[in-house]
Length: 260
Image 1 (cartoon, rainbow, N blue to C red):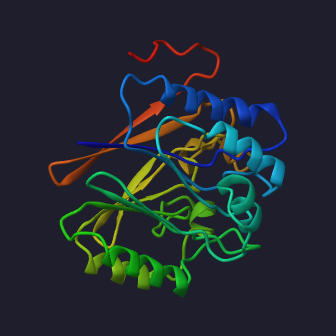
Image 2: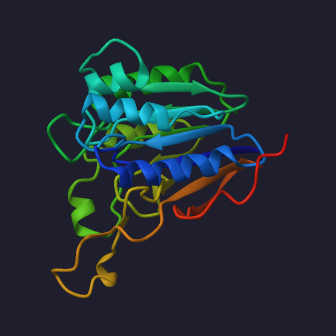
């Protein structure tokens, strides 16, 4: 059994609130009694793409579990690389392939510098296709990015989702060992399908989307800042994926210590 924690949209800025919410989630994961196979953070690590935000995020995301990150539309590639990943800055897409014990996670950069919507450019599709050539055909793969490639039936989110998705769909259909697609951006836990595979959206850490039928009037704010930060757990077992969601209270101590 493989267990992956999935969080998204921590939006670290100069304020204490975003830091406290991200810290609450990471403290919760640190105090779990068992090790996780990976922690995936699908974008919008920083709120303004600033070096100080990434330096704070790097401290917050330090964990005993393997932590994997990809950029979102609020991120900036060069400082993301330098201050979060500790590698030379570059404006090229930030793509990462992680080979775990019996599974692979490929995180793709769906951001378009200067825009809120997303796409996977040709170089990223080629990188993903080439990287998965090295993965055994029977090894489960999770592919992640920030922007959902399918509609979620929330007009604002759908207007800035991932577009030009035909190459990604063709790649997914060629590779039956891609078990699911992981994304963020929407600030709401959601599940649908893309290219006949599960598409699983992590809830937001910094805020929670109010869906159209939850908003009383057109003036009701799009996001709630009162709901607790949340995350997902994805379990890979017996050839399928199962997802659980958890909310984390920011004003309560962690309820148990990790067993030695």
